[in-house]
Length: 496
Image 1 (tube, rainbow, N blue to C red):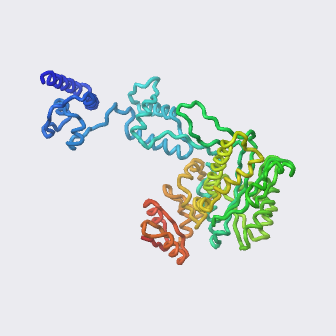
Image 2: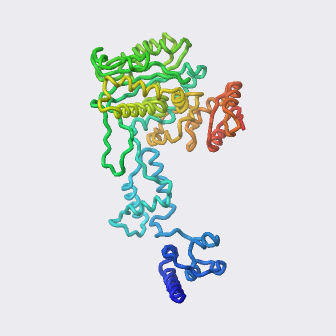
Image 3: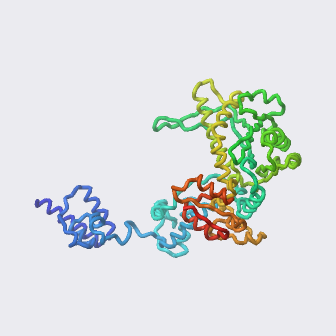
């Protein structure tokens, strides 16, 4: 026991010296190291060592004090003291996250440069190489602020971020309510176009660990086909229009059009794009024969010039069909097909093409096989559930402007024009709440029901709403519920 006792005494002396000259955080580290050595500790009465200094001298493991003696806690976190004060650092982090929401995010190197500028302005003593913090400082910053992460931003055109502002989109919802308030789900339609490329994107496959490259076969041409579907809020769909690249009808003979979606309309254009004449053709040969006999009806389109031609508008007026266009460059949040249908459609197309190419070496995606592959993906993705979800996500179903998230307008706030003329209702825009509160102020006669309890079924809520001619609004968080109660002026009733 003498050698062990001698070793214990030497360790106590070392810990005591570390405490005096290096600080508490180093005692914690050394204690952990000694524990790794499975060093036997001297029995200790915790009541007699209420301080870190006594525990270090008596060789008490630091975690004992944290778990068995709650009164003993560290006054500070291990490691060096941050160069930038905590309150300034917190303001920097909030500013950086706010810039990311507005699409003006800064990279890691930009953050290091701004940190150096802050240190210089505050005249802080620092020992950075060349006066600029390194990546170790950034790693420490992210540990101190776990909400700050490194993300790869998605591409978004500047014109899209600028056009999605609450004033313009709010006026769109105002007109949408006036036009659609008396219409049934089968009378509200949406049309948009997308492109399918014959050089598909291969899906992920199983491969060996460490493989340097995993190739995936694709077609030999990048030629694309434009697809124009049309759907309504009831989950129904019209036959699609497909535009191939060609100058005469002879180019359509290269495609097995009979294998495509049933009743689909195939046409051609030199670049395979949507043009004015094709827009009129689509309305005459697809919309009118398939939209039913109820009138009036509403078709929501984007602001492409081919959707607003004189011939198309005249046909719509003659048949009592209203054409409403979304604000330009806002389809990524306002178009139902863009939100919930085109994404699954293209993923299914990539999966179908990948499976087709992998089953036989002779299989290839080209004009002969395109129609059948496209139909398989079309049938799998254009389901009623996906279509209805798209109308719900864009606030068209039951006219719910609050379906557009507040974060969608953060990017446009950097381009706000203070000189724009606003209506009296629009001047009530709150700074921190949802920007469409003025819309609900405008239509405050609506009764909205909010569900919280699990024992209340959707059928019961729908029956009550139908009886009172009210809108059914599902809100999952208490914060949103409180937000609605703040601005609600009309009668309010909550199901509980």
